[in-house]
Length: 339
Image 1 (cartoon, rainbow, N blue to C red):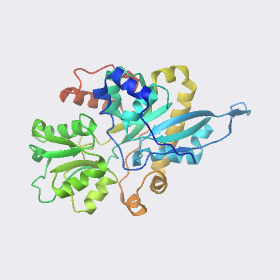
Image 2: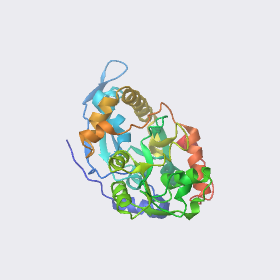
Image 3: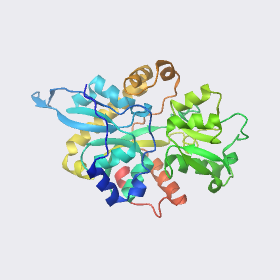
Image 4: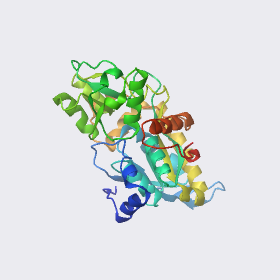
């Protein structure tokens, strides 16, 4: 198994400068403390429709080491991508600040990122094309995201976050935007919140120590927080919609235009992978142990996200509207590339 650690190359740095570094560097809205690594599935050939053997197309997919991307690992294991004529190298990165520039400049053919990051990239002129949904809320009260706090903090509802310090893993992104809307919907004023940017692994300890009043986390950090007697005031994602789509898989506009068959193949294999993951949650919990530092006990306890069958355009529109409401964007760009 090949192991690679992501580095921010000179070309990536140049791209960030050209496309608006301030916006692009907020793109890492989901991350983990897992060490980045690359894995490769290496089928030598794949059958063509004619019955002849053809060489598989090598493509690299940039992923974040979180629960949400488990279906891709399962899809490789089950041979779904090989069946579509693709040989995947799965490369783990710290977040969207690495993946979006790497895809746009051609280092990765495909990538995974939250929708708000893709909207910000599009608004800054980065040519991106969604190829499938990424992850969503699971449609139940048992969501994989939560805003956690101490049981004696005096914070019982979203409105109580007024005037408080709230930890998030990225400023001016999907978590701040959805918490702000959660507070508005509860009759509060989110402009009084002080957001503190912390990596996901540091948010629960900061709540426990009292450095922040509350914090937004996803699995497995939600389970870790609950195990330390923190309480949830609700999921900021579920507060938006029972089927709120948080992330998408994407490629560059150039690659999509030049390789439509490869994009169609990736989308088809991805759909099979999502269907398989949804039907086999125990296999999801098992395979997540292979690319993160999650232990087996935690993997068996975490809440799984939803893996929708198609892109939810309403979620894309909502996140763009929230970005304008919060002043992150001055106007909504053309987002037909993300729907």
